[in-house]
Length: 361
Image (cartoon, rainbow, N blue to C red; front, side, top):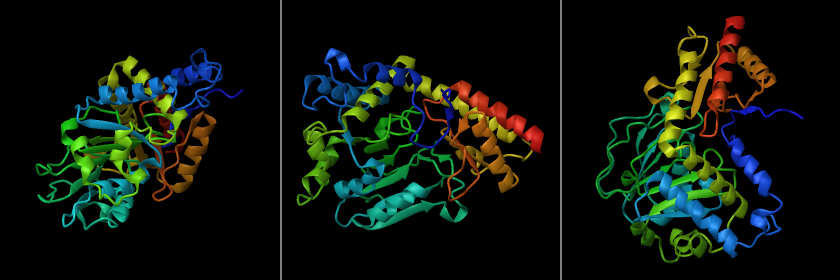
């Protein structure tokens, strides 16, 4: 049997081993009921306990105010690229977008279906090598949109831009949800696909402020309204039971570790270790992003030649370090250091990269 490897893929990502073991123990017989979680009714008391506890843990770990409603939805975070503008559109008001990566580009395409899009700042012409600063959002915008972490190029927002009072901020946190402390008062809507930091693929977490729910046009199909799901606690239709169960286990694990504060401390340590290897390599490893905007989740870099990159990726796989290839749009290498990635995994990667440089520089 092959030993577990260190999974640096950008998503679906590595999951905590204690969580996988717990799921394995309960797979055939959950809570003594003689059935798997995948088999129990979503209307049963056993499932509702899972469902509501997972929602509570999101609120607790993120310190969300009471007016935030937590949803478990399907369709991936990409579905929120149209659900957000659909639910938040205001006739005559623009949708302001901070464009700093591939995912905001996808949001722009969908948002144009529901209103005038105003790209207030963009780093596209510079290859998304930085997060734009000194951004001027419209006082009368329907909402302001941004992606907190860009998985492809490896940039992350650390200094949240000023947004006019009364303009709700919509943020895609798919790749850094619960990776660091945030001020929830800044946001109107937060969404995240589960498969990087919350659990397996198959469910998306959405947290939306209650006062925003009535913006949606009345003629919108029922299932496409956030308030439909809020009113039924994400049980309007059959939810993805097993992914939500897995998210609950992951969130319980985070809570036992010490919550988001403990996760952030560990994440910054992991990223710092890897960036030190890059910065001290005399140019052998070269990062994609300016230092002040480098992501603590997705570390992207190049080697001197494409041949060396392929060799490094291949030899890494032989050492049990998988998923180190960069995104096809920019090439190079990428190591995704999501919450469940252990310090030991990053130490192993750092040792390998230092050895590879010594042998190939």
